[in-house]
Image 1 (spheres, rainbow, N blue to C red):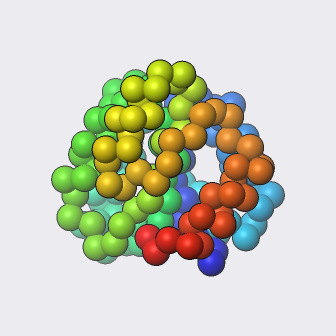
Image 2: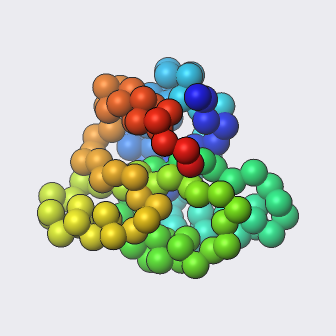
Image 3: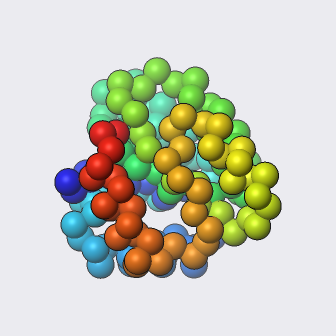
Length: 135
């Protein structure tokens, strides 16, 4: 199963670049990549997509520590949205705090917590796992 749209929400340009390279290299993962530098940009655009019946991303790679609206605030707002279909969220963080991983699991839309960096091997595992779940 190839995803149509994947969203990266992260303020680290090196992580964003590396993730885009991995996603583009593994062209069987997705067709489109949307990037936001913070949770506010992403929420504003997702709300617009919802309001205008545009296709929403199937998967989001979400950083926790960002300016303006962080990953936790983004998740809190996302769960309030009246989504027509589930968006799978992978929290991708450099946090070593086990509490962050535990907290992320309390959100229904979070599929997994991934420690940075995202690797080609991990991306392949996600592709296999995503094929087994209906988003």
